[in-house]
Image (cartoon, rainbow, N blue to C red; front, top):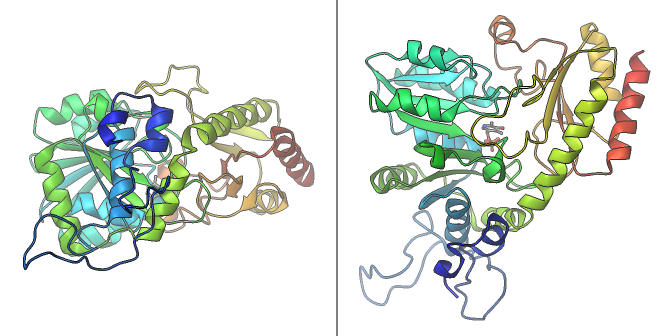
Length: 386
Ligand SMILES: *Cc1c(COP(=O)(O)O)cnc(C)c1O
């Protein structure tokens, strides 16, 4: 068996088999973990195999091949975290370059952009509403080199039109990177829509069990891939073999988990629509508009605002039991998060509020537990603040 045997297979088959032809000589069915820093050479400078594990490691390569295949790309590089992978994209820029990014961005990306890249490396950022294609066009300057598009965005779950953004970008050789963490390759495939790079925090749905931190970039342009790979090798933020193995294991059930995440999240939205205390629901398609980007389903994340003061909101997120109060998302377990004091606390309050992230906003990562228990848990939390 080689990877070519799986090239034209369906998503579910690729997720389980692609890249995962073991290199251990023992005919093991799953990919082994290779905990080695270095590899034996047959002669000095032997270029035929692996050399040093910062450059590549068989377990990591298996994962990279699998992600590339799932994204319809040719290359993928696995990083030590989602943010390390984001930096892998920003390392393609030079001092004085300008980036257009969506405004309700993952909090850690905002922190890196504003508190590190801008003051230390003189990279300029403009933030626009993900849904507003015209705003992307208006924000473009002579020195714009990158669109950083998170879709669905975090925590408001706004959707950007990737194809439209690509059209604007191509007029001026602007690189389009899509942070597709919330969608996963199962729900949307940005490379097929013309994006240059897809980013995932694999700490979320790809790993899928809240037990591994990792990031990945997938692409299909040979030259771009070469540059990204060189930068990763030069900087060193690679994913270790054990972590690579954990994500590989997660990938095999991605489609099954995503179907259930999406099914449960939609049921949660239907329930929230009936609750008086709920002021606004943020969920892809909740406005009745069709999903852009050929998105297969709206995803497993639900955000909503409740009519209550800060103390009551706090009480709500502290009264759930099935939903664990914790940052992060995308694991099999349901999590509840209060963005203003948790994931997005590093963004100044005025900026946060200007971007629509109010103190009354609650974000749910809907897990794959029984939907009956999930809904009962939410009902009990609403009763606790009534
Ligand atoms: C979590 C996350 C990141 C950062 O990933 P880490 O693995 O935590 O470093 C980036 N973007 C999005 C959308 C995320 O959810």
